[in-house]
Image (tube, rainbow, N blue to C red; front, side):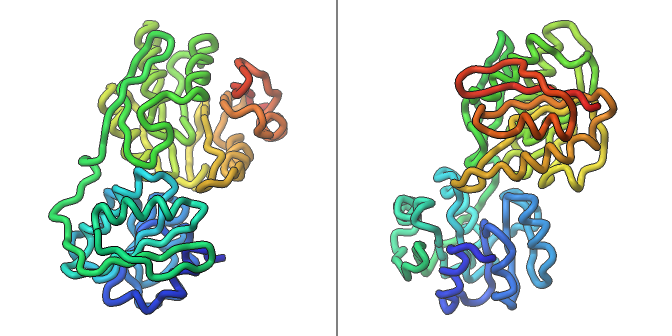
Length: 347
């Protein structure tokens, strides 16, 4: 099913001309309506997998995909991202992809903040004007773009230092990444649980929904400080910015482990004695626990017998019973008014 933003774009299909680039569509449902093909970029690994099923489209995963090239497109469509800061980066990519005199189209839903996003659009393309309002969306258009001479994800990378239990690590950040520039309270509680209930020394760990790589980098730094054998911590995330940041965070902190891009565990091979996670529960602006629920169903086949699954989550989320059903008996290691750290060992 097409999103309202995709429907609004199709209503304005005559705006599209020449070679087309689509940046950030929520799904692949738009592509059959645009048979001419072109380039489509998504920062979501699952969306990229579905986009790849459509012939005629060059699919790019994230802002650093090697297939992205300057100045090749006459129409560049920017779908509004969840994070306002990411829109600036997406608009910069759009202007770098644009051929001289190209047309830029911004489309987004009112509830996602399209009205505020227009200020960002006009800051870089003052000639932008509203083309349509439809399906609770707005469509904005700007002609005669001047192509940016360069674009690199490294230009947008920033660093922050986080500390927990006396151990500090440097963490990479990009627009759109979870909890950029700070240690969120859920992750802090998960790290504090390692300080009291550490995994067996030297075991390989998987950090599911690893974000910027905080858990893996911190856990290895904590083990080094304790004089313990250091675990290898593999990280997995669905978002391209997270994959970039986790790799940079690991390199900066001499952490070891593979960083994987995947929409869940279904397409991943491997067994880990310990799996940990501070999983997301939003899709866009909506609460959505389906990814974590599927993760809990899949986790058991990636754990050996007596392998550990440790999870931190908001207390109102219904994960404890699912962990017990899919993995094994659950205990609560830490909790406060907002978060609980759960641990289960595979039967």
